[in-house]
Image (cartoon, rainbow, N blue to C red):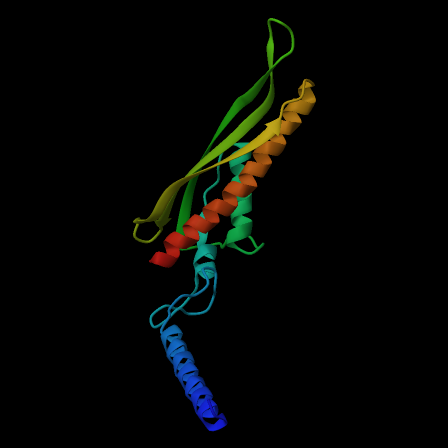
Length: 187
C-alpha cells in the first residue's frame, strides 16, 4: 500500500469515528436521567427536586425507643440535619416492630444449650399522606436485620442488644429514605 492510499484510509477512518462520536453525543443528550436527590428541576413542570420533597414530610411521634431511633435518623436524613418544618404539606405515620432471635446455640453442659449469637430485626411500616386532601401519597414496609454476639454476662448481653437495635435503626432509616425518595421521584 502506498503512502497516499494509507493517508486516505486513515482520513476516512477518522471521519467515520467523528460521525460515530457525534451520533453518540446526540443520543445521550436526549437522556432524561438525573440524580435521585438532586435539587435542580428535572424538566418542564417540575419545580423542586426529591430532596425538597423529602424535607416537606413531617414524621408523627412514635412510642418505643427503637422506633424513636428510626424517626430521629429519618428526620435528620430528610432535612439535611435541620429539624422538621412547622407546617409541612405531608405527614408520615411510622410504625416499627422489633424481633430478637437467638441464632446460634452452644452446648455449655451435657444438658443445657446457651445462645451465643442473636439477630435483631426491625420492620417499619409507613404511610405518607397529603394533609390538604387526606390522600395517601405512598406506603410501604421495609425490614433490616442486625447480628450480634450474646455474651454470658447480663449487662453485656443487654448492651449488645441495644447496639444491634441502634445499628438496625440507622440502616432502616437509610433504607426508608431511599425507598421513599424513589416513590416520590416516580410521581
